[in-house]
Image (cartoon, rainbow, N blue to C red; front, side, top):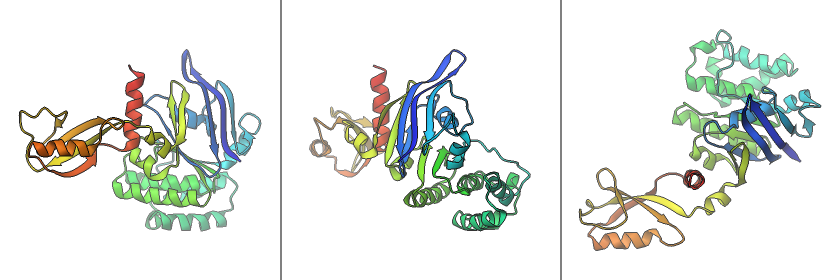
Length: 302
């Protein structure tokens, strides 16, 4: 079954067209990242799916509930975590979460049972009676995630769920999302962290010029990458007269960008040895997916 089907979706703000015929299918049980540059329309797309933004034209269905014909059915399937803090600063953590469950018709006793388990998983148990205005950014993010899943959604929509949180909280959220997806929840997220995509998602859709320009499995997209960049740590500084195609960085580090179809790292390591420089370590400058995304941007600007 398709968890989400979007066909010829368009959205205009005045004369500005943000979405210009977007098509996207997301299979049940998938974990898909919607990527795109700032202003590409990612948040607008998520807002339309969730019923928060009115589309100009096109169709959206969630688990076979049509957004136009059955908006209540669509909302009953969705859990949404937005970028913004959209809750009362004077309610407690528990009140925010239980009220969300109440909006979906979940009985108070059942809501408390679910909240208890989720608070324990997300390390919020000791904060359940704390007013949300007293929470740190990371605590608020965890609470918002709990609020999004308290209803047991079939489709979880996350708009930059780990933006601005520290690495410990990020990994805690990642672990929780993996568990949800293993249990069958379909997840659609936007993020600017390519590491997050590579750690969590099976599939990626790239939004460009108001449409999906590419969609595929993460490993399929990165396998198309030909231009790659690595950073070498050398045993001594590169000689001043060295003519190798390297960019000197701080200290003993140099950067090497190469075409994987024509060159390889071992050839450059051998060339460095002829200049008296041993390579102590090698690492990618960025994630493979980030390299692919940047290459796509550069190619489109040519």
